[in-house]
Image (tube, rainbow, N blue to C red; front, side, top):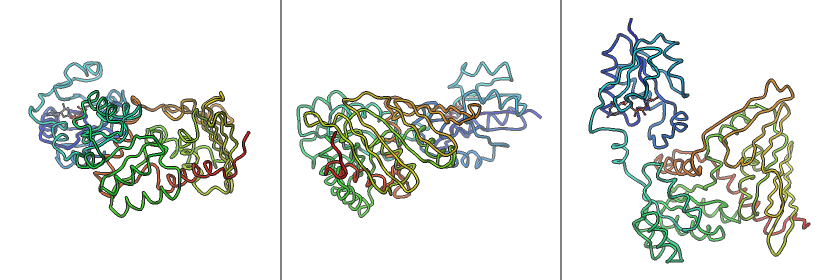
Length: 430
Ligand code: C2G
């Protein structure tokens, strides 16, 4: 029996994919189709896939052409598969001509003609898009725009900044069609808004955007009062709008897996989360709060701050949380040097995430017996903002059926911590 194998993402399954599978099948008696996992596509830089892996597998199955479907999850797997399944022919579309010649050592390699005039990219471009308006055209917005190009269905159509000259320059630089003269003008030209203004203005802008019926992606720190966070969620929920906070760590592949790994008991019961990062309370505190709330929940018993202020600026702050059966601490230091790492201690082992842990791409799980230690590596592409942008798009397109990588209660608790600090609750000055 002659075995043929082919691989693909098969996003928005179309005639080109069908033709390819049919031709591949005709080369032998048994066709194996490898469908890429969502993570593998992310790792190889395919950020714009619309269908999830199960839907893509289903589409391949529905052709009736595949005798066997497998998933492809890592680079180098093709060699393993060819040997494991005793494959005679590796077939792939002619857009890959030459690329897979290295497989000739293991089996015959055939490049099949590609179907012209149709592709997943063309189909994606024809899908309804979310036109995005930006409020606040400073540094972070300048990093956001190039990252958004890696995500499909979210063209940036307008930007607004009260400093109209700055806004005009920003729009010229990033080829954004409209520098809006007012918020109303911005809202008339977009269906969703990214708020990248000074944090103290987030609440007013987010409120006005939600009231205007726009989905909101708000930069972090979100807001500085729990009641403000609650009020924004109330509007978003009543209007069925997506309200998401842009905290890049929460959306990157490594951090998500770290949390699920630890929640599954990889280091036993978590007894301490300790995170350190540079910056000030009203800028960076949301980063260490993320692993704390993800791993220990938002129901802490008490919280103390120790802070050193110079010329009105908090140059060093330590926060200590007591939970029923754990503690958490974070340290922010604009004017104090330290190692910016994240360490999570458990009853059986600990997780060590070196600086810059907020751009997680690597961590280690360590045990008393060093033979058990494990290192984990992940992609963290570019500035890392593309992951949150992709989540935002998916949440809007899912129309109410999505979940947010930062839960509402976590965003409320972050606002509550900011509020406690600003009010000086349990705050000790050094
Ligand atoms: N294809 C085609 N004609 C088109 C579009 C795609 O023949 N108009 C072929 C591709 O050449 C490929 C298969 O359909 O052989 C699947 O294409 P994609 O889903 O785009 O997958 P791809 O990114 O090419 O992944 O490990 C994965 C492989 O490297 C291929």
